[in-house]
Length: 189
Image (cartoon, rainbow, N blue to C red; front, side, top):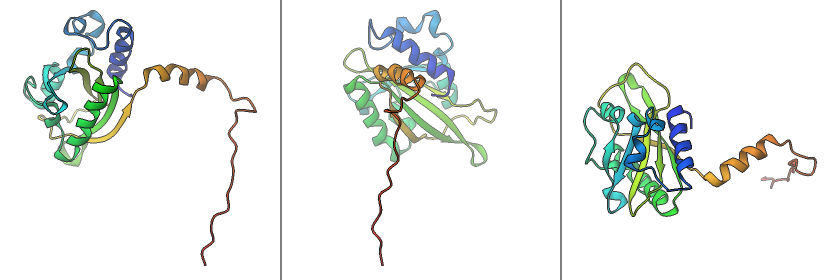
């Protein structure tokens, strides 16, 4: 995660996680979410393929030059990447783990805008919360955006994040240090 708004939403989700899985519309109106609200979205639908925006923040609507409410989430992506997005939605909704998706959208003069998409697990049968934010602010935004292309996907294991950070702070003991083993390969004539 590179954008502070993505980090803030993820940390807010982690703080709510003990009480509930996903922020509700009421949670989204709290003071803690004011900075992330313009990039926030809530998806609803019976299946991952029918997941549509039931809420989309101002910044998202501005990027697409229209109100995204009622639009299908997968329609924001090019046809080649829609299977990847459907798989991501299925993983988030069934495994109840958040996912970070890196994407790019073509802009003016053969430039690309880079985005982080955070998908958070549902509270009820199907209701995903998330955000779409630019990785870095640009002055040459072309609206409406063209279809996004998926660049990367990563499942965020919240339970594993904290221990991994703690382990990184602890210097390895001699018994823990990795060893380098060199194996002779096959020589071809």
